[in-house]
Amino acid sequence: MDMLRGEQIAEADLTEWRKLAQGLHARYLVEDFGAGVRFVAAVGEAGDAIGHHPRVSIGPGYVGLELVTDDAVYRDDEGTEHVVEWVTQQDVDLARRITEVAADQGLAADPASVSEIELGLDTADSATIAPVWAALLTGSAESQGRGSPSDEIRDATVRVPNLWFDDSDEQKAPGQRFHVEVYVAPEVAEQRIAAAVAAGGTVVDDSEAPSLTVIADQDGNRGVLCVAAPPATKD
Image 1 (tube, one colour):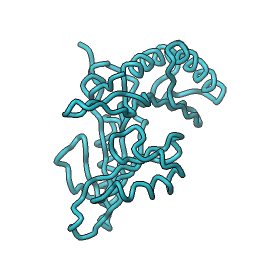
Image 2: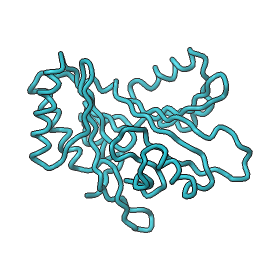
Image 3: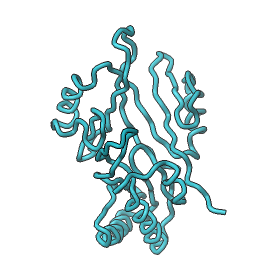
């Protein structure tokens, strides 16, 4: 099934969901653990009907959901097909159905609270170092390039954050190699940046804002705040 582009996801008008990194994310508020379990059971039945299910987490007062297709098809500029982890139409369809299930159970969504963490590593030779990180992070060589046309490390069990590699000049003097990428909902991005600055951080690059904003701490360590396009609203 073909992956959906950003504009297609936005046009789906999934007001209770946010596109962060590879998937669609939602969080619903529940009164207690039992209510969360009942909601997840109903979501499971909805998924059974189409043969697709979300990743689920349950915590105090909430149920977190992520929808992503493991075998989405991506076509590069040359027309070559790659199997990737990304959002497809089945994720959009199930997201709409889950929204209906939540409404039936009287649950409110909290889309501003969703977030996702990824790691980035600058390197001039990802193919050489990726096997080391695949073994260290996941214990499996299959995690290298899993769901990605690159050497990115993705754990099938989602126990650890994804690690992707950013091309760097091997002649460049060594600097900060690792950085953290924090994906947040669009409506909280400005607040998150302001809080980081108030805590002593500095915005060092906002040339791609609001999609990407690079923030440094007092020691010069950098992190990237990432924001996907907000869902489109219908007239």
